[in-house]
Amino acid sequence: MGSPAEVTYGPIFIGVVFNILLYGIMITQTYMYFQAFKRDRTWMRLFVFFLFICDTVNCAFDIAFLYIPLVNNFGNVEALNVATWVFATDPAMTAIIAILVQMFFAWRVKVLTSNWFAVCLIAFSSFAQFCGGLGTAIAVGMIPEFVQFQRFQVIVIIWLAFSAVSDTLITASLVWHLRTHKTGMPATDDIINRIIRLTVQTGLITALCAIIDLVLFLVTPTGLHLIFNLPLSKLYTNSLMSSLNSRQGWQYDTSHGVSQNKEPTVRGGHGPRNVSVNVLRSDNARRGAPQQIYIDVESHEMVDVMDVKGAGYSAGERSYRVEEKLRTTASDSGEAV
Image (cartoon, rainbow, N blue to C red):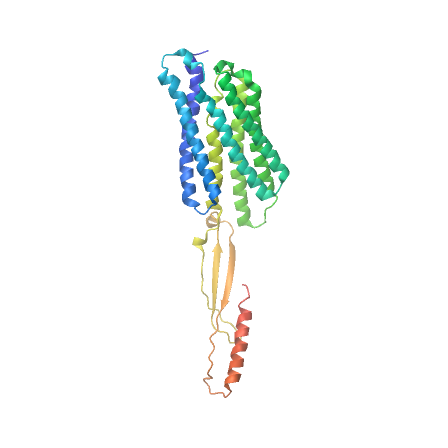
């Protein structure tokens, strides 16, 4: 077995590096969100801002935890074997961020599916992992020696196992609902398939990371599991932000709509008819996918009140004939091409 710095702080250093990298991605995604979705509800924008603050605090604590033993206590081998209170904040912050993200997705499951049974299961699993994360933070404060972390296996199992269960339930609920509510329209189904892929990818990443973290914690006494544990909070926030920001690509692109004015020959004495064609396309539609075309027809008719050929009829008769033509025009304007 190598030195304490190699066995424990090697994995911690790698985990903190991943944490900071993901924090940089979180900064970018947060900026994109506030720029692109200014009309989102106030509570949602405040929710995103609060998550960003939690991520920032978590990142600062992780950097401080590396700085204290490696710089302030440089040369003190005993300091490498003991976790400080700063380290104990990581499981607590991860659990707080996880329950916030999971409850948001539980709300989304409720809105989409109205399945209270699934929502209750997700909420229960999320609350269990939250309690497990707080319990792990308390246990680290009570037993700070790294080599003694195996003594509180039960609370760590509750934390990470229920975290993975909650993520899996969220993914399964959303995927099942979306797959059973396809419309048969290529453009709409293409968007649904993209949502399904994104849901599976983001949900499985957090669940898989939590499972690997738990397995490594149980099978090895070293700090190897910390490589996956420290970036876990950033995976949750990035998965949420990825889901929110991807909405921009699902909207129909009306800026590339097509407008055409046609003047077909219409029998029955009707004048020129203006036909406007609006094409609503998704991003994939512009790359060759089938398009949905909606056509609005507007009819306009020029009516000359004066009889240019000198046919004699009274003003009342002319008014009656004009009204008849206007009624005919109004009935024609509702037809669809």
